[in-house]
Image 1 (cartoon, rainbow, N blue to C red):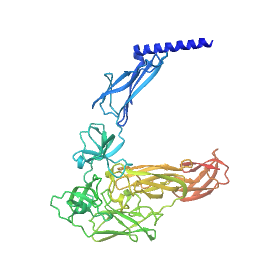
Image 2 (tube, helix red, strand yellow):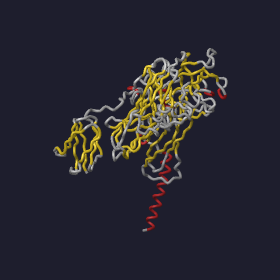
Image 3 (cartoon, rainbow, N blue to C red):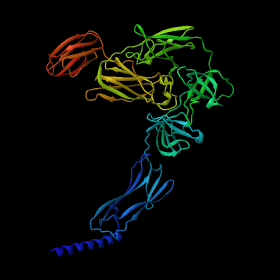
Length: 587
């Protein structure tokens, strides 16, 4: 018996070797058992491209593999090669095999041939996942257009991409016939290396989303010659007194302006060289200018009040009516501010309190407004002009909730160099990115009342801590841009992250719109005491059980009201005030 089994096994192995060798040499694959595939079908600019061959072998052994024979700038040639199975132990079984080859990242239009047959032309989908500004290259890249990336997470040094052979279009889908420095773009890119120009990638596709604005002469300065690391160049020095470092803007002086000449001027961003010295802190390039009219001896001064007291510390920021950027910023001294040498015009002042010294007061516009659009303006006249800013106060109930996030500008040219950098005196303005630095962020409750504020840090981050579990609206703005977001905190979602983008402009009311019978209540669920906040007088609160029976009725004045509900049975109730109804849980 054992001898018969061994004899049978020997015969099977002998046949397998014979048929495997024979079929390996003479096998011809039917068309339906031989399939070539290129994937991804529509690769992005960063995807590697693969060619795969799927086939069925009738001897149980793999028969083919793929090799890249040759390649040039626009063609890749792949060939199938036969596997020698003459020494393999094969069977009579049909088996499916897959072999593949990685061709790497391919340029648009690349043709792929397999065994001399064209099987694919690469037309990758380009994802517009980056934002930037077109800049003119300097140094070894002089004369070339590059894209300086402004994506919010990028570092301080500019990240550059070449613009050679890109697929360019306008935001409406039409073909773009060229870009110029200052254009705002969305683009997709793939890795590249050019250490000479600090180029980290190649833009593959690009879409125009904004053109440089008309030059706005919103700065006042004087012509100065360069010194130290700036010797041999001319600059206009910004006269805004807030900066501890001199803010110099490169100026092409053809000899018509002497040192000390006062002028109004506008600027664009400057592409920073990696070896830029702090001895020559260039913040931009003067793109438009005009000799300034003689300054009139007009001064706008005033005091920031907190009720019957004087604000203990903070910063005053000056805005002129019709100009969407801050003009100057001065620290408060004993609650006082002063802006001398102003031309006759209408102005408003924005007071940002020192949060450590004034924990319960909000950033406030003259006379007592919270939003730029509602600010009052004072018409400056000859001589001394005195105004008062009445700071707005806030109160809030504590809790365990938290709201946090990042805030940034939709475009880098929307940044307000005075407002966004008033508190960052020890840092040079060395970046073109969109991060919103040192920008007040206000928090309103569901009733539309301001209950907290904070200020974004150097990375654009903000956070509100120890919040009651309720619904809120987050608001931030500059004179030109606005951002807002609604968020709700609950016991199941007590910490919420919200990123906001400052845009031009989406209408934001100073306070969220409320109806006369709007109300909020807490805690919910409740055990003994229920607190209801109302926005108007002489309203009636009614509490109904799940059967619709009236369980409690109480007239409520404006403000916070306490109701004793401990006698109610555990269950679900409805609290109705006017047309507003909310669910209440008694536990």
